[in-house]
Image (cartoon, rainbow, N blue to C red; front, side):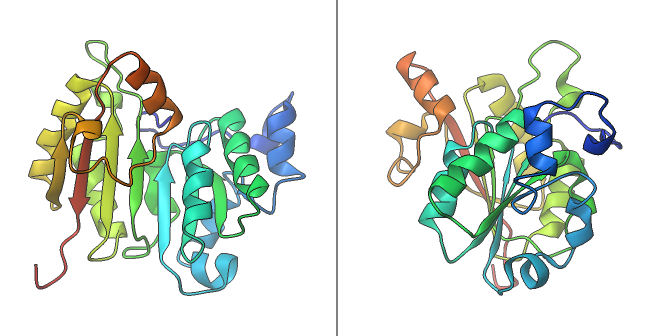
Length: 233
């Protein structure tokens, strides 16, 4: 899942003892999963040089085990799709699941989610999904949460007008924290639920691995949808 703000990222090629997932990232899957050195080289050129089309460019921040990543790529073949993960194992799991569906419209990036301007020009992104980021629940840890005022302002600039952000979490405290920041951000909050699966937003929602685990425990999922307004909204 997504982690707190930092300004550097470890280099996969410099690891003294790379495991099988690092080797897969740098070797057999390097066409589909990009390391932290390769990923920024496509800033502003994802559509032209990677996907070679002008379809919308969507992003999932923190793909986890990759079930949603694979589902979304397969369900939206006419959209370009990127996923960001910092951990090697879920990154490789995500791309392998998508490839098993024979999807070609996706890539995985090893990068830190707080450093998105390294990867994208302003207005380059369309829809963004943030599902179950690390809530950093202990006292004094909230500074490490992904959802911060600065992060939202940055993400807003990177998205096209009319694009949306979809956010899910099981953690009520993190959700309350996030909603405060959503409402103070440049986004319009167009959807909000403290119990996603008993709300109007349940239809068409894909239940992620985390959702299924929490639902079996009777734990509600919290959901928000944000819109970057167009000039006439």
